[in-house]
Image 1 (tube, rainbow, N blue to C red):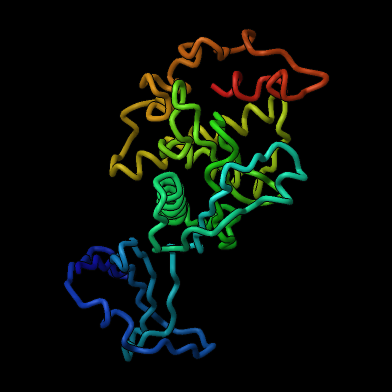
Image 2: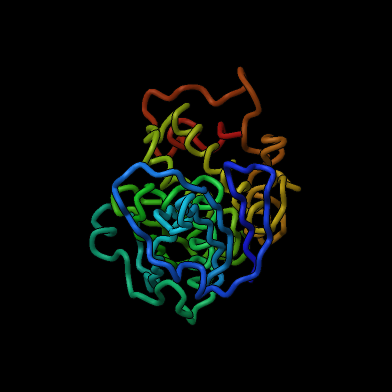
Length: 288
């Protein structure tokens, strides 16, 4: 295992060293409660398949480890099977969610859609932790719950604010595949959780469109991170979701999907009565 150590205070010194994982923290942290002159050491390493990033503080006189700060966080991840139960009302959600537990953390889900949702949630959480120093979508390490097999042939996925979890339909098989089949979608729904925990924008008209737009932006950013790229090589959202291979939305040219508006004044107008029939005032069609 390789560690990259950058010692601040001597900014020109950078050492690359190889050590065993068991030796990284063999010395117990000593919290003295006193102000001390220290070296600040950043450590990056892998542990159980997860990238770790810690900051260590060593006493400048005796080299003892006096403090440690973890920069990467990992929330508990659980994925459930709704067994095709419908989630159309709040009553449905209260009665059926989260469903039958299939897997927790590193367990095998033994279900393709569940495994995609499970691994996807872990990877998005890793992205937010490593890139944005955020611990789960709420910033406080809340458990990541996903439920798959919502209803029968449902062409949709949701983040539910009150239940604080993601749910996925299986698609109809003719237009859409399972909504877990595209990582963009998983990252998009996760980001709705981030937005609801921070800006908490109303899901209607302009605020709702911004809500959707942030999920698109961070969805593609998380996918770029997953693929090890420094910048997106595509601005197509959900291009692995549709059976015909076309994208669900085009961030570089919103009108390409045949539904979305481009820019003001072509935007969908403000709705006095935003509801499901008018896309809550164009939250999706205005999100580009």
